[in-house]
Image (cartoon, rainbow, N blue to C red; front, side):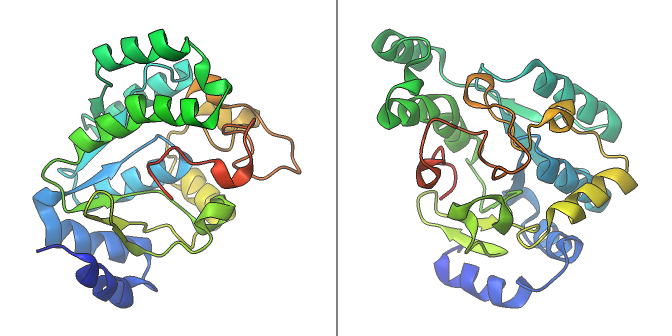
Length: 234
């Protein structure tokens, strides 16, 4: 039975291992109960490349909030074609989206944190819960250097809210290590990364950043840094 204690034990065993070694163990040990939750980020594209080389039958899913960049949709197709996979796409409940827009307007998320979190709940968190059904481990592309909210990140963590093991194989990777993998393995990536977008989410909630800004500064840029999570992660 998957639980917090097992997650602690697994972190002790794998916290200093290379990503490929971590993935090889977990993909074999949890076989049909593990999946990559991909946002099509550089990190998730690197993980997709690693996972397909280890076990191409592994589930890979993404969330279509209905407000993604056109470049993100193109990348889903390009990734599927390169790796000969069919990424699962989860959509929000249309009735809940309609209700949300009636209550707060089309862009109500700009005006209060509560309204922004309500939008994330409808467009991201509820579909994610459906994607989690039957899983014991979800693989994420989180890294410690991405945000002030992620500096304590570990390779294996216990997700109390979802009662799952959260696996972060790239937790200690640097920006340069990620770029090296992308370059050397010719991994497809979102062209917006070359236009000042280090982190890409929904189109109205993402902007390009300046060279001296934090890499997450373009996400929910109107909020304070400590609030910049949608609820998927801490």
